[in-house]
Length: 275
Image 1 (cartoon, rainbow, N blue to C red):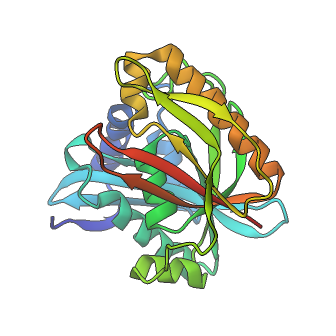
Image 2 (image 1 turned 180 degrees about the horizontal axis):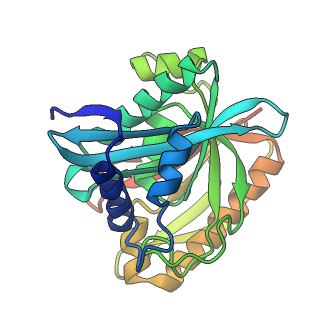
């Protein structure tokens, strides 16, 4: 695919960004949209609003702004990234994140943070596996009750990832040189099974602080599960909450994410390592 990445500058492009937000997150109205006046203000005061364009058509965008970390250092807060449905799985999001990285490096900042739903396998694969982010922060109901089509009906629990964009780890990851094999045995800490309809169910969870490297499984298609079996989706939300809160408190960090294709549609696993 041939597309260009550049700042959104015209009123028409900014309106297209508003419309894309509604489409990507299936918003019932425009109350949740980051509006044009805020997009412009942030962009003209040190923030970032980049679009991926296929000719004149907006295929995706990324939006962020400077922030301050808990230790008082400057960082970049990446607030939104969206890709139009017709352009997904074509590398648009990845290229937008690379362009964001270059912009932030030029500002002299080495950390970008953002949040995402840890049950979204596609986002996890991009953020953790492809970009090289790490995560050690889990927040319950981060945004409160949501009304959009992706998040409505469940607590808005979120991972906050850290992307250390100047680190050797990230450079090797982006170059495809990062060795992903782990020397330590990997211990599975959650049992999973299938319902008669074929949906993945969370099973027993055990805290094993003697293992240096652990993994736990999540549904490969959480939105499909949520649509077909909302009660089971809530079980998964609470199960992942228990696992992550326990292991983060014990000093573990998410360092990788694996997805294996199967005849059932795939199996997805987080990898955590002890600090």
